Image (tube, one colour):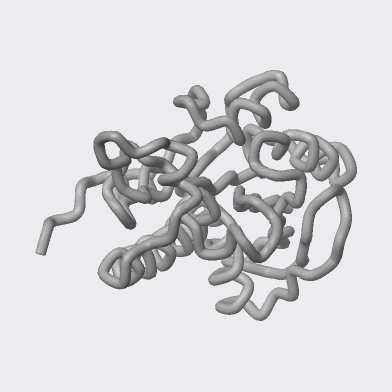
Length: 192
């Protein structure tokens, strides 16, 4: 079984913001695979289903971004999941172009507080993750204001492509093919 965690902040005010792309990917997957992600457990909304022949739990922690590790640790302990093989975390990255993906089998937090907290709670950084680009912060913008802001209409179209790519990448990872996912999606997209 796999636990697929999308990071974001709970409550209506954060819906659709750059920082909530992890939630958006989970919502898109839930729609595609008809998985109801409304059960409240382990300080998260979760839903169980099948994707690519694997049992999965889709999870949206409700702890606020900077405490995501609390929910993830609880899920892993309860379901006895090996984070190095059966956990996938999806989150936003300001160092990538809008809709661009970067898939890693492990790595540091890279300044992302949600990932920092997960690493702290897991005691290691060896877990697969998918970073979804939300675009670089414009000069003189406050980083918090930027990531809590919404996408422009043009950016929304690129993000939809990014969400679709993220789902395809997850399908590869679930089929034990993270290398193929990295080969396909870790390259820069051509600008139109």
